[in-house]
Image (cartoon, rainbow, N blue to C red; front, top):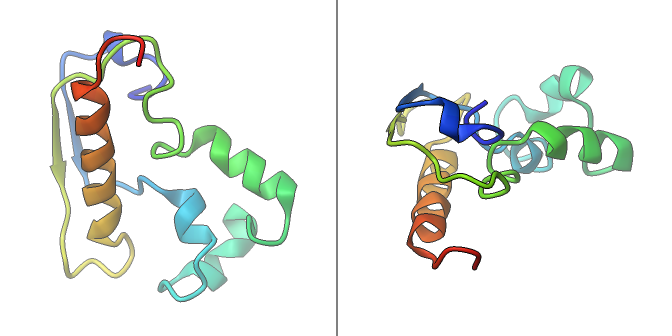
Length: 105
């Protein structure tokens, strides 16, 4: 909803969000990746899995909606082994870059 129809939200709070499942599931060095591939699929070896995950991946779909994101509060923790805080940092960096870009660019 946040990336697909951001105009429907006045603001959003994301707590320990899993913002880059495609990147995470492609990196076997991350904790839980290998054991979670049974549920999520293996995008590094199966193009269908990669396409399916990319279809709902918040990071991959950031900026595809015709409206800007609402104000965000994102909570992340350096100590969370399930969801690395680098995902939130990259998401925020990209969201800020998109917000600063001229309309249509």
